[in-house]
Image (cartoon, rainbow, N blue to C red):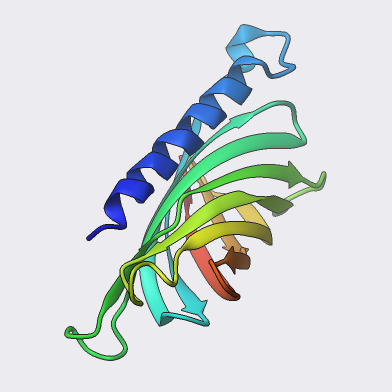
Length: 173
């Protein structure tokens, strides 16, 4: 599992970038700075790995009412070929999230960079940095927020490109 070392490096990098950006945010009141956590599940359709299911965790920090920065880590399992041919993907992401004003369900756009680290393929041929741009919605519940999003990513491999289409749903606490 050679891909675990790059996955850990990518996770630490995205976490440190989020912390750094939250410290230099334009919030004037230190009490406005806080971290928001989200947990979700989803499916991923990948041009290399096929169809998979997985989990995602996100930590974000608001800069103002419209803009947030986030660091994510997702883990997906692709097992449509059975357990013998299963592959696993770690996909950390660093994102900017812009929320549109409105009542009820908030619509947001997210974009950023990340990594696609797959155990499939030969010698990491499926691995590479990613660029992602997605759209989502967040609906307030009583004490939490329900979110759903589509966040396609372009995987820039060594000699080609691939696409990943995750569809996610989860809870923000």
